[in-house]
Image 1 (tube, rainbow, N blue to C red):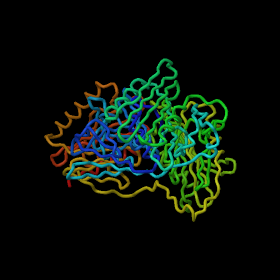
Image 2: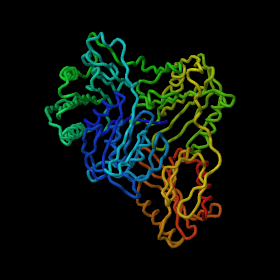
Image 3: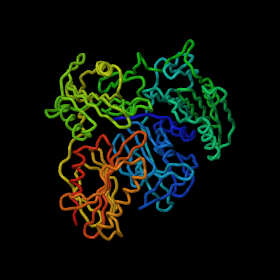
Image 4: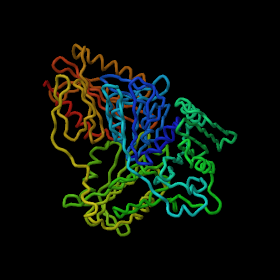
Length: 627
């Protein structure tokens, strides 16, 4: 899993983030209600002015991605040059590009019901179904009111920090901030990497959160502040304070406060050369603790020095220690990494470097139940064979499975490299070991060149401490890479196609079907009317080729030509698309069966454009037949 956390130019819309933090911190539901064509939606009863949701194609509802996903607690990053939106959320990393019907979810391609669109006002609109399924939300529709309701439930993630109550100040030496200790509040949440800390008044809804994120290259302080200000105004809240200080470019600050009859909201931002610090507070207007909470927020400042400070940072010698008491394990995580998986995950823990220039460096730790068929050695061999099979042979190189001793661990491992065109060279070591009834797997990827990368990885693995897990407390943890066999007949238009049983359907409406292959590619089959025969079909594909030749982002790999697969003849066009970060292979395969035209669209990341995946595609093409 290769992931990155970036800081958006259009950062957090202040009130939406505050509401999201409040709801998520208290383990309540996030409920979003709206009607198509209405510029106002509600988030847990709070009205928010948004770009109007609308419907495209065959009933696909497009919604503003930022408002919806930030209400869920996700972080949003917009790249204006590539027109790409990236969403970061526990266990979910999503990349969406304007005009592309293929999304990337946790490094794998996923077909969308409709391509994301950019409105005239600069808002990114994305299919609601994709967002709800990706973030685990439920969608309901009221036929009478025409209202759509999206509901997401989060578990209580509250935690306290031992020792903090006795100190006059608290802070974080890693991120460099201090604040007076909020003794009238409880620390409700502290993320593993320390970039988010939430405080709450006992038995009340009053709370505030501190969010720290790296300042990206495209960060625009003025634009962020104006967006926050406009959000307050658009929600109908009366602004009661607005202060901004940009005299020092190395420390720009702003604070906005607003209220309505029930809620008082305050938002403070400090932008430095390295980080952006946000404080988001939401309080009852007549709450007895509001003024004290506001006073404590006002003591927040950059820097970590002085006496009687309780340090919230867990960084020691360049690492944070991850502990899981239930699985009786711990290991070191580099200080520059953040946790990408849910911190309440059962047996899978993922981390990635917090560097927008490095989308490779990552760690994944998984625990499985051991069996006669699933041992450290068998899993290492199976995993290597699978990865070698699906990876692009021209870009990757794999070592053999070998045995190695790490402190008290006897492991089986293999290594491989992938030479990405845009992202650089990746080196991965995949290590497997076992204890008692369970098998453990840790995979560490680094971006090359990296000095002393062997010692770096050795150090992380040698930091692993495990105790035997009582089976009666944890139970079975199944391996999730069980390979399905056989195919299923599906229908599109007037033809049948055989689809492998382990493929995931993403859409099907009679004249269009779309699937994601577990090996990493996505494909869509479209039935077309109005094309008289193969000559006209060839002309259509040739015209597409001509358009792509005019676009520097495309390279023609296979020009328009006939391709015979089984009993079918296709006109194929294969091209390669490049943006700043990725290279993707795309194929169009067009044919006529029973006097009707069909186009198979294939999208595959370059590192997965392997002989195996190309054979998978050919098998599907060969299976197309009159129903």
